[in-house]
Length: 282
Image (cartoon, rainbow, N blue to C red):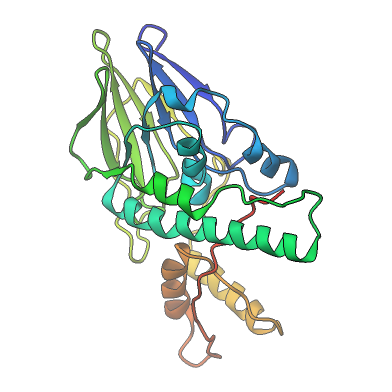
């Protein structure tokens, strides 16, 4: 790897959100994912800091999937000077349009409410980014299909393969060169086999370097996930408050919920709303 390039881990390291990995090959820079930090306030505050690299110097971005912790900082990247292509699968392009617009709208709304009621220490309170920023980022998305190699820079070629997880999710195989032709594979977030709605993840034939975000690497999946979910459903039915599921997992989970309900058992009302939450406000 030393002859072919370097990697800087700028997110999803020491925490599970904010996925950003900067790949440099022969002086050219490619960013793998560009996500927001979420969760604890100390993490969310990192979203307000300048990106730790020159955004204008990035040649291209490769997205593994559309979740906010993998794509949510794209508007910040573009606002700070990035003008290159953002490659993703067609379904990721569609989902990113929903997620980034919704995230920007919620941030603008939160800032407006903070200013109206004066509960922010900032005057005025500002959104992390605006709808205009989101639209600028979406204008740079370029879709690429699964299994078809495509050039990213003069020294990097990429292939997307299905990763399960959510619609459009992909592993990214990168051929680095010329000369050594090192094969780097970035996992993104991997899904499970035999899931409703989604196709199974595709196997990666080989790699010289494997970059895996192993959030749950020390855990064993339940042998009967539907039965485990059914127990959760039963506990929800005993609660007085309505519980929400957020898109884009909602379709997959609601399908499993319906199949998990016993015909003779109590029925759980299932609905949906625009409930993609933004945790980016400090």
